Image 1 (cartoon, rainbow, N blue to C red):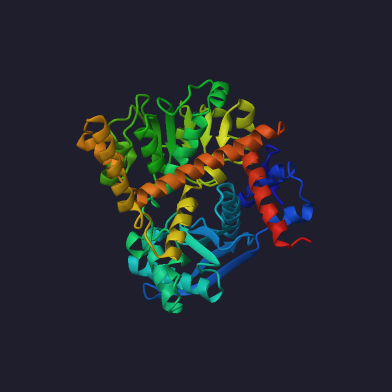
Image 2: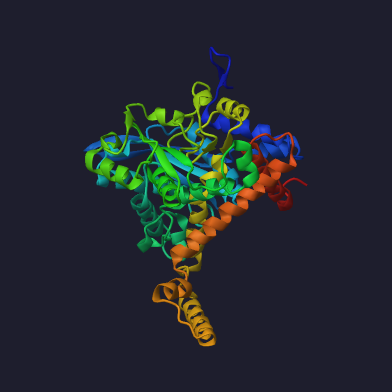
Length: 478
């Protein structure tokens, strides 16, 4: 049970926060309680301890893999390397993955993994030993495989670790033709897909842009339609935060504030995200960036920045009862998993702000992971079969138009019009279509239920309906 704090508000664990949002939404569905409990429960929780020799001594590593839902297979979810990893966190993230996949119509059940280590304290060789042993434990218990459970990178892990896991899997499962599909987020040379690295941040941009393109919703917020000119603040310059900031800036938004663990920088006229990122790489801190008019040593100051759009892209529960009332942004886009507590949600709803929920907004990563998984199963790069065919067709059409009109298109125009799609073009197109379509599914639910007052509840209702129908059609509940 959740503990009570002195201010009479519940202190939720991360998993309890997800359950609280689920329960709020479940009231707007027509499923019996038993089915709702099945949807909400984590189906399989694998807690493990394994020994690894580190620096000549044996170290016992704590790790987890959770499969939240088997209504669709395989399960899907990242592997987090962090000292903050615990069973509650991994269960929460796995459950969010279930609802996230349902929201964006990706046919996976939710999963999540975690290794409780600080990766910065280990050498590359030591990290490889830990990763391979973790993979071996997953293989032994059938918690990984292209048809059962497909991990991916998360906080503290990346392409390198995914390559080690793939190699371990193929070594222990020789001859499995679809082995590359056992994990996503791989390097291109190992079967990865172009566009995966920036997918989550780009998905965040697409989702926020879609809201900003709805005149009715912008009028309610007192904002102009469109993304151009909107003032944006981003918490966290990791992979997701950087790419979200990059795409906002590229499409005409003004980045007024950026933060990292060491603090926040602010400039109402705009920050250059690439220059800030370069400064961080060269000096070790964004606070050394010369183009900021204000810097503070508090990372949380960015949350209270004077802006139109706030993008928390760091960790969970950063916006709570203590600071939610101080937030000036009218649009909060949850690029991180669970950055708002339930109480913060309620405060921002009463203020009239719109919170775009994580279970939709940061689903770009799993969407493009789905594309990678499909690529691995089909054993062919996207665009390989049709790129030249389409270019030849486009050139033929241009030639016909030129002959009919007696006019020539320029070389630059020809290059744009005749271009056949590369893999990254198709990935971006598929991601954009997914984010646009899913946004309007959620908005339709929101508009259909007068008692639903926030997008998170609408997204949960949308997801629960899809999962519930899947269970019923499977015949599990006769």
